[in-house]
Length: 271
Image 1 (cartoon, rainbow, N blue to C red):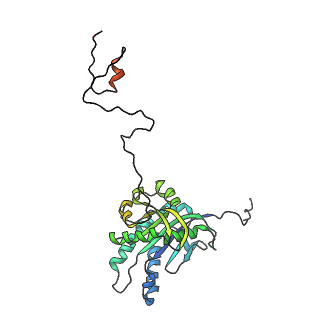
Image 2: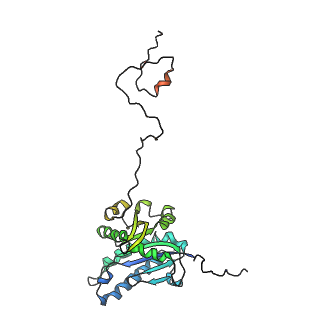
Image 3: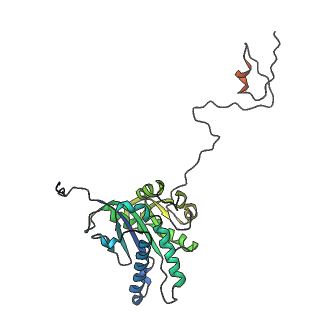
């Protein structure tokens, strides 16, 4: 049996899938209720992960990183598509059920989320992947999408990195979510001027165009050229006139001109 390769400092770490979540307005919750609210979120997330048959991140060394008002969860990259569908939809549904049963004295729970994939060393979490996941979560686009969620009765807004979108959604691995459920945007963070990345925004229950009015950094919609447009090198089609006379100084065959002139009267008299 071959001995395992010795890891060198410049080796690329193994790739992992990452999900980050953050509670909206956690700092505004009364201190005496913070722990209970956070516990409720943890219970909801754990239940939904089990429903989606996803592995428990806490079973991976360093697979669960607490961020105070949220967490970063690590998964094997093979389950990446399931972190988009069904996870996001079921997480929103669980938050809706929580809201329907919530006591008036309990704080409302609304979440932002981000999904990314990339090389990351554990358990020390060294690598750009975790930083990019956090910045997608904190981006203006994700925060603005949460306003769309509020107006539509949803409790979750999520940002997918472009690589996640391509591997999961564009590749057809999300059976209940199509490309129209996502909106292309640019992720920017106000206090991180050097960060700017393309992403895809998703609000459960809404299509991408429905979210567009809420975002200032939405990508421009793709323009579709008119079906009647001619290639630039195609010869221009002459305008059809209601009348006029064209003389041909030589013998021609009828099909020669039939495709160019709509109405033709041919005088076949020999002169």
